[in-house]
Image (cartoon, rainbow, N blue to C red):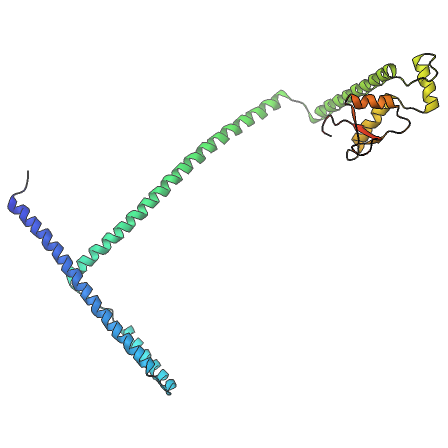
Length: 274
């Protein structure tokens, strides 16, 4: 149901009168501010004029000015501040404008705070998810440790003895492999016999005694020991005790390699990145 035309007209007139009164109040306040500003300019001009007219008696004037300023300061301290205007319309208009400005500032602060709160909520949710995942991982690890402890109910001494036994078995296996390798090399790669008669072992022994050659097994052993003992300098000098065919065989089959600057030195090929 719409209001009567007369009532609507009265409301419009009241709104227009309120706006005109606020505008008039602002105009009055601005006029009073301009008057006070003019008074300040006048006082400032007088101070500047007094400074320019200062002459030889500057010390006495400075003392008199200090006394005058001190007395004026005391008067200002004793005075109570007065409002520029006591008009209710002016105070109402200025107060409404100040409250509107403060309201806008508070809205901006609220918006920023809300955005920060949302960001903090997202971070909190992410951290809670991460914490839950870490708890699940920790529980899984604890369960696995408990299960392993139950499965391996062995004392520290028994574990140590088992480890020693495995190490000894490995050493024995390594020794047997080395013996088998030495026997195989001695059988299939004997040292040469210059006379060309007798069995292979006898010819190898005679040539070794005469020329002081070392076997292929000893050559490989020297290369291996040199690589393990001095990895920074793994090269071995190939003197007269190295039979050249065996040296060439090691080089051609990729078991050994020559020194890039000295052809009389060889080293074991870097099989394992030593």
